[in-house]
Length: 92
Image (cartoon, rainbow, N blue to C red; front, side):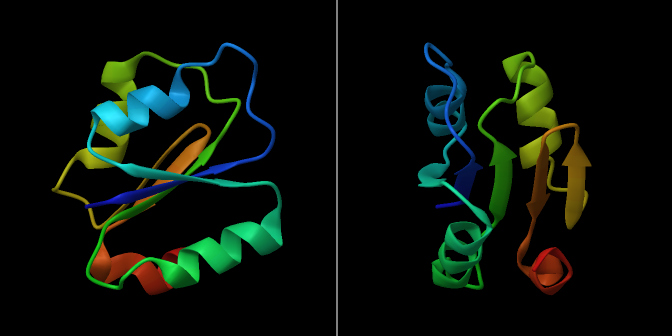
């Protein structure tokens, strides 16, 4: 299962966490850079991982295209970046 790491303080009423879960991501919260690094290190190397700003605002379709398109090993949209296993080292 791919993992999404939400960074920063979640916005009250935001649906980003549920949208990520609906895309098949296991979601973890990171309050700072150190938490993000720790969580990235825990994600198995054979899984896709995404790092998403908790303040992300966008249509769920844009989020899906930006974070789950299998054609690109590394991809970014404003407020989010994702890496497939082959590109994980570039992300970290």
